[in-house]
Image (tube, rainbow, N blue to C red; front, side, top):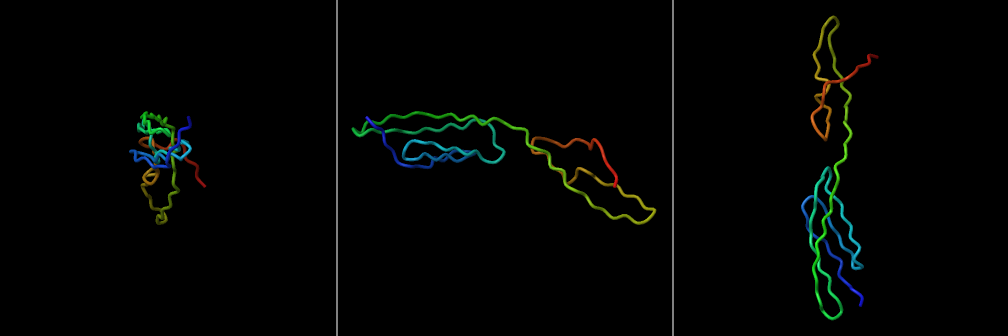
Length: 105
């Protein structure tokens, strides 16, 4: 006996679940989310019999790249300047560490 269904969107925290009428499921996690998503669904046959099941999707963490942004400053001749090199840089997975090397041009 064939099972049929209706296309539907299921509201979940941290992502989007879409189930097509043929039962194909698409899940797209929210940006930078990792962890578990759980949701339920129902199936129904031509006789009207209904059953429910649950889905658990585990999104594994990945190491997001550090983003170093160019800095530009102006200083007077014979002057000096103090600059926080990492002040405008970002590390999505945690705090930035001190710069490891510099090259002067």
